Image 1 (cartoon, rainbow, N blue to C red):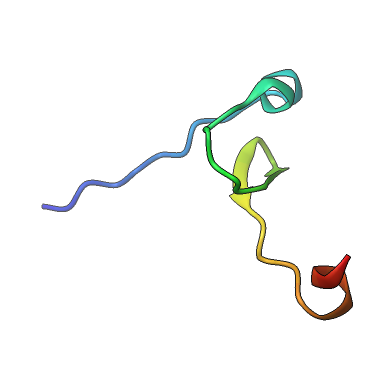
Image 2 (cartoon, rainbow, N blue to C red):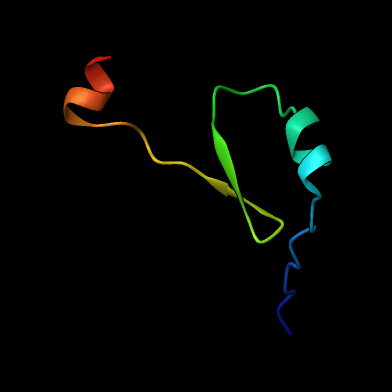
Length: 46
């Protein structure tokens, strides 16, 4: 049997104060934290 992880649903207020002590950036999508990809091209140079 495999374990299924159920993501924790966050409110917008919880998202605003969320800290995980890394340099990763997240966006909130329907209450779930989604890690943002690394900026590329001109966006990465800024």
